Structures are given as structure tokens and as C-alpha cells.
Length: 223
Image (cartoon, rainbow, N blue to C red):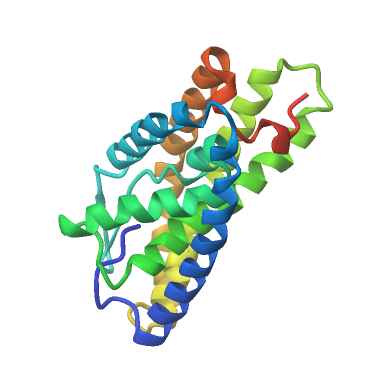
């Protein structure tokens, strides 16, 4: 899903930069509430480890016709652990490092952050919240409710992000929409299986061992 430089037209590139920066500024102040807690210093190395995991998530790329690529994203995973707004900031920082190594363009950072952080992270988080609400009506254990919801939400979010990416390519006039969207969606329907399973397993492990690190539990209202 990494978009390289020059693949999107200047207007689309600029609009997505503005949207991503605006959301990141808002997210910065939202994240401040996390670090006001007494145990905030414990989260700092934890965030670093999480960022490294996401970096590894995205390290393996599968070339997709049209100039972009397919890979695991991890946006929903970050959102579940640190909050929906934090996902954009964490993903953006990861994307900056990756772009320096030629994985994704520097001018395309706004678009990539939008697709992976906002669609894959923020939208993914609210999908998980929806599925948690539905699963709360069952007698399933709390950790399994969050695990299942994370798996489904992560899967849908990455497929949706790939569709949005395809639409951006079509708007830029690079690839016809009848080709861009189906191709991007097809590969991420497959990749999304891995995204959902890995994200769900990581959340399950954390919730069983260090539930306090799931900073969004009160928002998700897992019962």
C-alpha cells in the first residue's frame, strides 16, 4: 500500500497532506492525556517496541500492478493499544523512516499516513468498537471479545484502506478505477487475513498478560 513519489497528482497529494497533518496535530494533544498518568514512563519503551513490530509488519512488500505494493499495516493494532488518534502519529513516524530507505515516497507521506493511519487506524478502531458492542451481547470472555473484534476490524480496515488507495490512483489519472480498485482490493483481501490474525493474537497476548497497556479499554467498553 506504500505509494511512491509522483504516483498521485499534486492536488490529491496536497489535500491528503493537509488532512493527515490536521489529524496528527489533534492526535498529539489527545495522546497527551495518556502521558499524564503516573505509569506513563512505562509506555515510552512499549511504544518503541510496538513501532518496531509495525515496522517489521510492513517490511515484506508484495508488488501490485500500477506502482504500489501490498503488505500488512498494523494501524488498527496501534489504535487498539494506544488510541485511535495515536495510530496516525505512530504510522507517520514509521513511514518517514521507511521512506528514507526507499519504501514509499517522501512527498507521498501524507497519502500513506491517510490510508494506513486514518483509514487503517482510526476507522479500524471504530470498527473494533462496533464489533465489541455486538459481542458484549454474548457470554464470551472479555479477552476473546476484544480478540475477535480486533481480528475482524483489522481485516475490514486494511481492505477498505486498499480500496481508498485505488480510488486515489484513479483520481490522479494513473490507473482506471475499474482496474485500480479491484486489483488493490483483491490482494488485500488475502493479505488482510494475516493482518487480522496477527493483530488479534498480539492483542490477546497483551490483554492476558498486561491488560493495563490496552489504553483504550474504557473507550471500547469491553464487558
